[in-house]
Image (cartoon, rainbow, N blue to C red; front, top):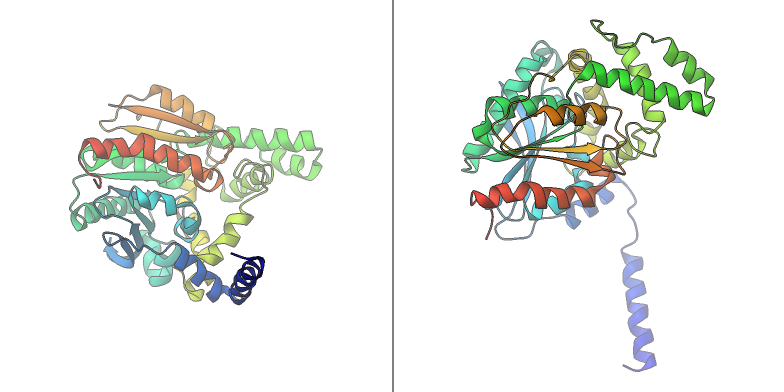
Length: 368
């Protein structure tokens, strides 16, 4: 190719890039994201639908490049903090090795938008949420002809996940916990101490006063008031105990706006849904104590953020040492707090492929 031809080719490329400039609005941005992660393999799946669970329509997405791969159900945290709207960022690599299911739980995300909150409100109990999770696993196993699936619970979702692992080990290749709840009252105390120590080091007197006013925070036998919990979380997040080296969840909150699964109307209610779920369930969540739940009959994998104080990773690690299971593995994410799938997505993918998928391979539940 001569110099003149080379220059012409470069100009054509520049013109092509110029024509692709944008996006100019949310719709264009979302379309770019949707097209970049579109599943094109002939044996793949890309579904967004409602499933009738617990008497109401509940939203799921089901994505993967080969339906012969194992099912991985992610049970989101919060309560009400849906993972589906940021899954476009962290999940695409998973879909080459798993058929990944994101589920907006009762009272959360798209499920909240699809149902009358006044009708759903009386059903917002942990017992009903656990029954929903059991129904969802049952539906997935039947829908895709799978004896077992992977269940991965994050934060609040880990409280549901660990109960399913205990009650129904025969349903699971393995249980995977992230931000795993173990002893919530002790976790709350350690999170409060972390925030107070950080505020004192920083010379942040308003934070120190606000946190000291909570003492004795989460004292044994004491119910944590929501307003006290929110005060603790405000400063815990400010000092990186929720997302390491960041102040809060602002990046994730902004990324939600690029979610292809959500309409403008559904986005308008997503934070309202989070408040709705928290108001009904959060007080119970911070009282959960799994210290005595130590016997499991399915493999257990725990992903633990080294800097997680939202759900104390040190409390989780101490609980992990006490559990007995056919196989167990604790993985430390050294550069993460509570959002390891967003904070270290590469390590998350490698860990899922190297530590979880072999259980499905042994069972013959993978694509050749």
